[in-house]
Image (cartoon, rainbow, N blue to C red; front, side, top):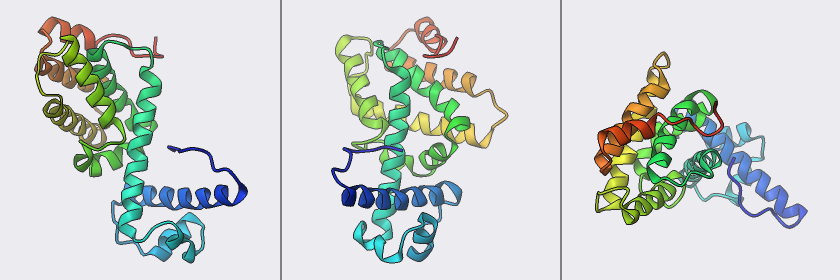
Length: 211
């Protein structure tokens, strides 16, 4: 679960724990059914907090579910960050992001279901994987690794392709996820300006932490 600065005292810790319990309950609902019509009472019961506690943290269910999506996307970004630390090549970062996302269908299915259902509206968000991907695209363009001229437009294409991969991976669990992710990443890298041989080689490098 994504976290901010640790609370300073017991009251703040309990308040943060209650808020996170509500966010966690909302994330579970989004991942299970995507139905945001659940009552505040039902959400509070799932979170194991008092009904009145809800309004100490959120003004509406919409605000809570928005916070739940943001929390999931930030955790998604953190999971990827932890695995790609030390990779400097922007092209390899793109490829690894695709391939690690495919793996997360097994290790973090809740996150991927939320990403599939809610991610399109957050492709240009200021949290989650989007700002990290935009940074890598900008570095790749500045260094000449990528020949596209507009990082924001490239992020739209990259994000849309990644969401398609997520949908494919969840809908077709029998599919070879790494092969599909590598193929899509290769297409994206060629779109960003890599030569065919280069794009193929980058997307077949060993993933961080794997033999």
